[in-house]
View 1 (tube, rainbow, N blue to C red):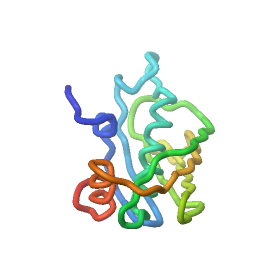
View 2 (view 1 turned 30 degrees about the horizontal axis):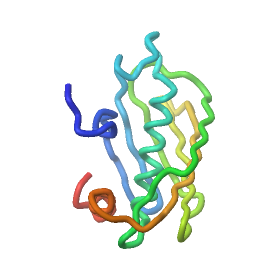
View 3 (view 1 turned 30 degrees about the vertical axis):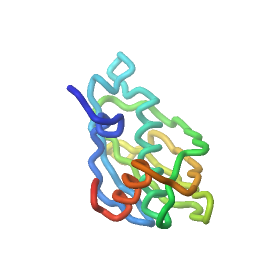
View 4 (view 1 turned 60 degrees about the horizontal axis):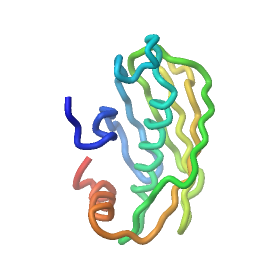
Length: 141
């Protein structure tokens, strides 16, 4: 199967995207495993980074873009393949940086990982600016 981006390949189902909360689900399969029927830790990180970045995008001023500056993951437990649920909440929304915390759980509500990330806010141009502003404004998902 061919995808236009890594984010598309994650197959994230966006439930809520607002300035104060990002909620999404992701159905994992063999391609997301570590080879032993368990979700690869990098999938937790990619899922959380995508949610935290979307939160930062929702809070961008006109003409600005965001990029992850720092990310820290606490792995709490492994997960068998299936649905992951991610909720990302802002810790700080400032003029030049934002900090978002994402909690990833399984369908039983057990915490799998907690990810804290810092997003840099900077002037943007070109396709990156166009895409992030369109995401913020709801013109694309």
